[in-house]
Length: 231
Ligand SMILES: Nc1ncnc2c1ncn2[C@@H]1O[C@H](COP(=O)(O)OP(=O)(O)O)[C@@H](O)[C@H]1O
Ligand SMILES: [Mg+2]
Image (cartoon, rainbow, N blue to C red; front, side, top):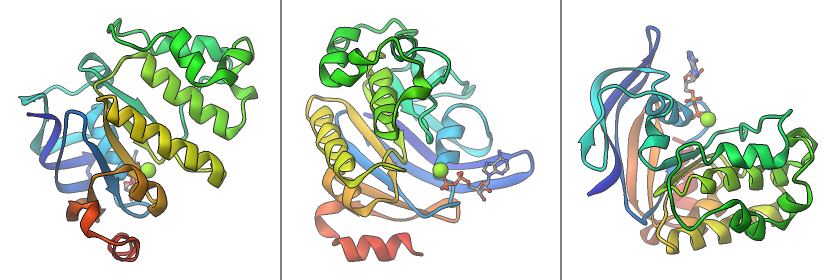
C-alpha cells in the first residue's frame, strides 16, 4: 500500500489552475524524486497536501485512505513530515525550540532531541542561539532535524539543496539514503540532478502541472534526466 498517492489531482489557487492531473505514489521506505524546473508546480504539490490549494478533480490518498479534507496538519497527523522550500525556520525561536516544534504530533519512534543532536552536533552546540543565526547548511540540518523529531514514516523535502555548498549537498545525499535504508520513505522534490541520482530509486518529472515522465533511476542517465527536466 502507498504511504502517499496523488490520483489525477487537479488543483487551483483561487481560479488559477496549477496542477492538471498529477498522479504519483510513494511506498513505505521508498526513495522517490519529484523533479521539474522552476514554476512547474512542485511546491504546489506540497501545498495541495497541506490544503492550501483547492482540489478541483482527483484525490489524495494517505495509506490507501482518501483524505477529502486536507488541512495544514493532515500530513503531520499521518506521519508525514515536510521540510518546506526555504526551510521554514522560525528566526526568533532558538535552535532547540525550533527542534521541539517537531514533537507536536507526539508520535513515538527512534528520534529524540538527543538523537537529532547526535546526528547534527552543531545543533547541540548552537541550541540556545536564534534560528536566524545559522548558516544555510545549518538551517537545512535544523529543518531536517525538526522533521525527524516527528518520527515520520515519510519525509518530504522541497528543494533541500537550494543554496547549499556542494560538499553539504554530498552530506545531504548520504543522509537521505541512510534514512531511507532505516525505513523512512523519502519524497525528494529537486532540480539538482546529482542529488536526485544519488538518492532516489524512482522519479517523476513534472511539467506544466502534470507528470510527463516517470521510471526507475537505474534506467536513466543524468543527461536523459536533464533533458526530461528541460521539457
Ligand atoms: N499562491 C499562489 N497563487 C497563485 N499562483 C501561484 C501561487 N503560488 C504559486 N503559484 C504559481 O503556480 C505555478 C507553480 O508554482 P510552484 O508550485 O511554486 O512551482 P515550483 O515549485 O515547481 O517552482 C507558478 O506559475 C506560480 O507562479
Ligand atoms: Mg518550489
